[in-house]
Length: 309
Image (cartoon, rainbow, N blue to C red; front, top):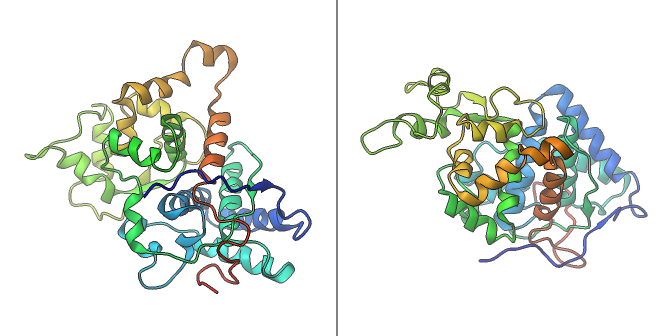
């Protein structure tokens, strides 16, 4: 199924008349949660990505019932639900039945990026919440073991380009990954065993020390070694140097097209004119936030985000 960028019209300031404090309420909830848990920005950014990539940015990842997409294997480790619910509860107290959970997720991701020292940007809003959430839809998500061609194909079917693939992957600049996603790459990359040759030999011992073969697979390590709490393009430099933690990140440097995009953020022109990474990231986030959106009279506005009305 192709679920590309929707032609429906979202607009910046959609709640300007109906709930003028909507965005500031979401910002406040995200800031409070981040003070309590510094990993919150990375969690909320991932939540938005999972929501949009499974069946469109419709809040379906938030539904908490048997067979819903948040319980898919591919959604393992996705969090931030309680932050969205707290923002929703406050919004329902101020302007009930107005602000969708899908928009809260998109706004929270933007606020999370800002809190991690990333760029601020305007989020087009007006999404409505979906009426379906199915675990069977989650196989459309890009996977850590995907080849570069599989990654490009999955992005293409969402209406996203190779550049979108590179810059949205760079969202891994903040956050952590479980050793579960590393064991194959470190010890069983080939049928007879062995490590992914794309890993820089100077980095391999560090990864193995963090994720030894007998490790608890839930142990977590920074995805962007050396800059895991600050939003920047450092992870792309790591990818260039063979210091990518995740296999799917490393694959970006194996393909001529995606490699040239990664390199473009570090070339002579980038030194002269400054990196355009932040601008490109914002553009890709806005595009991703338009995948399969529901607007107008489609879907619903949920009263609580974890359940359909």
